[in-house]
Picture (cartoon, rainbow, N blue to C red):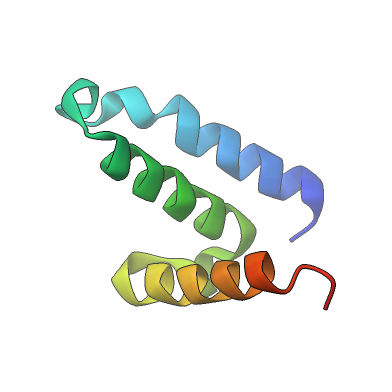
Length: 70
């Protein structure tokens, strides 16, 4: 997926966020987890979708954040 598609997918994810029931009452932790999930599926939906994909994206993100120059 090219960068234009990634940004379009993330924008769509954010734009539809208000359609979720109860989103105004979400905790900071829930909001952060949802936004992290949105980044993952925007980058590679096939790899990072659903619970298993989210867990895989978190591992990849932690690896990136702890070793950004590799």
